Amino acid sequence: MHASAVKKGRHRGRWSVTVNLKSTDRVALYLVKMCRIAHVDSQAIHAKLLRQLDALFNLAYSIAKGEVKQLRDDEGKEYSVTPQQREKWARLAAYTAQVMQNLSKGFDEKEFQMDLKKLERMVDELRRKKAAENDRAVV
Image 1 (cartoon, one colour):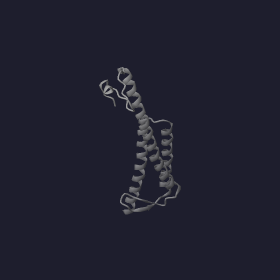
Image 2 (image 1 turned 90 degrees about the vertical axis):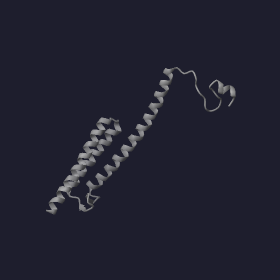
Image 3 (image 1 turned 120 degrees about the horizontal axis):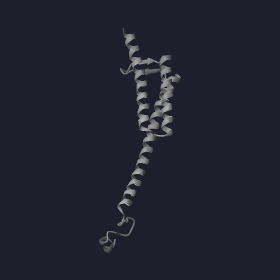
């Protein structure tokens, strides 16, 4: 680097500094950079959410289809899956597929949060039903 280039605030080579940018141009550059970051991050988040939903769908679908014969409750005890439970797992798989489809069309965070809450309620219902059946079996 030349001494004269350092004095003027510039140097030659791969790192060049643009000195006379207007503040509006700087703002525009910052916005472009932020949009790129947001776009890349949102794509990564979008892909990760779809992978997680796909895993949930595959699990629910395999249980509903009868490929999974035994499940384990919160205490670690295994139990057979009843036809009624398989039906509920099928509903969970179907709704998960709808959420995946909605997410593929476009990401609306508010709508997605509502979809996740509904999925959580469905899973909680499956857990409560199993707990109630265990309580009846013990009594």
